[in-house]
Image 1 (cartoon, rainbow over the protein chains, first blue to last red):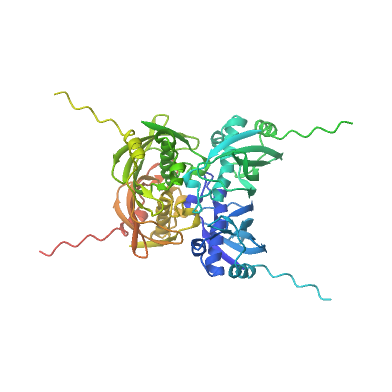
Image 2: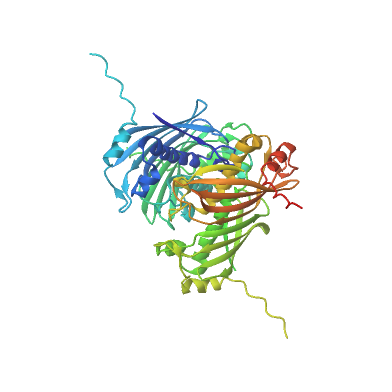
Length: 141
Length: 141
Length: 141
Length: 141
């Protein structure tokens, strides 16, 4: 399972002194970028520069516990479902073992020339597949 | 039904030239602030200054169509459910009649002194209730 | 003199409960966008869409007094100097008459196809000129 | 001289595909936070939590070359001047040796209880002093 760590910056905080939740939504994108660099093997800037993008069509996110200034949020990234042109990714954030958020994000892979969905290229599909959780083994017969 | 309009600014855009989705999540908060000023009758800054806040515990958002620079996003705000200390709000965004997003946000009302949930005060509960959609009339007997 | 008003949103605040200063720098861009809509007569999205941009090459900004949640910042926009491919703009922000910031921003007009400086088109130069402060009249002879 | 590196994220970009300049102003604050962790020896969250803050009263920033997606911006942080309650810090950003910005930021140290300037504590003054550039030696007599 791919994990990355994102540091909570002053600019992420709100007037209550905790991370403002749209900024935590942005953490999901940052974790996805780190997933490209650390797991896919091509950076997101490189893939984006080559003309592929992955706009989000749906996000669900639950905030379980406040995220504070200076926290290092460990984010686990798991691919949940791979379609022809879309991918669903699950994120779980925690701080020192305390769960702080969980989220699910559906993205469509688009060709930046047309901004229309395009089949996920094989090299990317293979890396997404490698980030899925192993299926539970079937019960013995 | 309360509605407000938010202008898409240069700072809301991403490198694909459309609104970056965490910034559209921020639009939900801005619409909620406008809902306080325009429907509740006390501004959010005033309520926040008096010691109440409404951290989001869950957000779900679907992006239906790209939001572009200069778009004026009309956002409808409907209260869906009112609990003892929480409220669920539904948002629907459109640009010139074209739906661009829909979202649902669950917030908990907290007392800023303790940062713990507190019962929704009556004056606020009454205004939330006034923003619920009328129930469909029962079918005639 | 062109003026516009920008409302301070929850998302603009920092953990000290005042506007985070990079967000006030963003207010300068928003005021410049309003200046296009309200003074230049073509919106910035329209001009940007037609292939002109105005990246900032230099900004200086002084923060004179805290900007708080819910403040409506009145921003005056004055063109200070017009070069062949660049323009210098001065901003003064105030809240209920209390000065909160002043700033000066130098932008270069670039052609988005090449991202290189391009002479300011006449229609824009004329509008920039109309936003300069009148020179003091020379003393009578 | 203290240096830190900040990665340019998707959320930092504008519609021209380069870092939006208010986000680069935010990089200055992030570099200052890293300076606390890496040079001062107490993290900024810790110092802020203990009741000191450093609001910016003046910033000047020049943008020398576009900052692109995926760039790792090396930022050098040098203390320029230490007053009784204020400090002036100089920043120089570069990408692979190419200068991309230089900036100067004047901050006032405030006591968060009163939000008024307070003398820089000795432990912090000593660390600021250690981050000044060595004066050129006087020429031999």
